[in-house]
Length: 185
Image 1 (cartoon, rainbow, N blue to C red):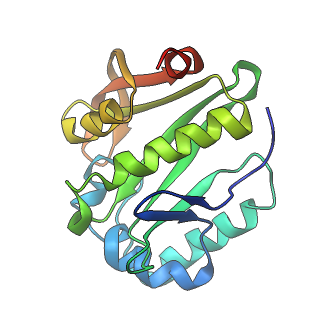
Image 2: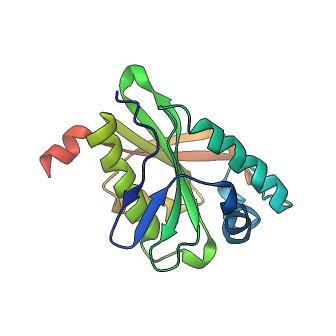
């Protein structure tokens, strides 16, 4: 595994980059304070931009580690931070990562997260040298699963009542893509 950390990635419509302290207001306004967005997440909606700022400060400090991967999602046409995508679990011994993501509600159903997930997956395979990238979603949030499928992930199965999020105990639907899947394409 190459510990290259979070580097700027470009897609047709997006720039994926490191967070900065100046991103706190955008993050708070676009998704961190929205209980609809955080419904299926493991952390509660932020009550203030100060809380968001503290979270970002922790992320910025973590960028010093080459095994920390967390991107701010910014459309090229606005430069505003509208979401994030990150490695939430890294298993170096298996060259595997689990991805988590969230996006402001105003930007749903535009293919933005699929575009971001594809870019991050390619980076994790091609540059970091991973063999497997996985993600899961609450069974009650099938839209997140569609993002994973559109990004080339295959459904692996359901772990019944295996996780807790802001909606309570839930079934987790797992998806993954492995290096050999990409090599076959």
